[in-house]
Length: 304
Image (cartoon, rainbow, N blue to C red; front, side, top):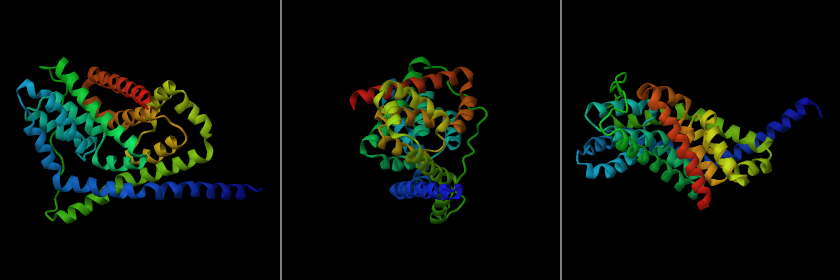
């Protein structure tokens, strides 16, 4: 068989796997883009106003305030570089750092668009993802409330509240433009994720992968937490990969660790976080993320 024939055959195999994955999750991607754009255009400012109104002085309500801040972070549609200016404006208006921490971390880990994407992973992983991200944000807020009650944990001096407002008074036009921006920023990574998934299905031995990330559950969790750092680029792009991994035996715990460390340590996020946290607090952030993700992975594997 000639090289051209081999390449043609392999291309057909890859196209077969690619097309199956594409049509399996494209509906979740489209729906996620629409929902994320709708929230960003129509109710984003109202969501963030809720956090300002949540800045209660009475310590009795602080715990519930942190929970509320985590919820606001999850339903906020902004990326990291949109979240930081918002958080800076919260800080300038006197919102406590533990509320901001809970809001920011939950926002980094999850957003409405990614929630919709995650439906493709099945009901169990979908629920695990939401709960683990929610708890991660809450616990971060509680830790800062306990250990930094009267100290500044963040430094927003280099960031101003320069978030872009919708220039279009016509909300329909703004909504359509938001959909286009979302597709431009995530579409390529989404297709890349499907391609990587097709390559994985074609060339990676499923039994070996299952023995590492499924059978050896302790090692699988640690490895999944580690590979989340270099592999995770875009939430939508990792959905096809996770779907393939779960189908060949990746444990729920390993998947949970990957879903936590990935967005929390995404390279494009770490630079901005280092600026607002400083070296010491940035190191504490990384330690917290790895400890929480691995512990969550172990707990999920015990439960399931």
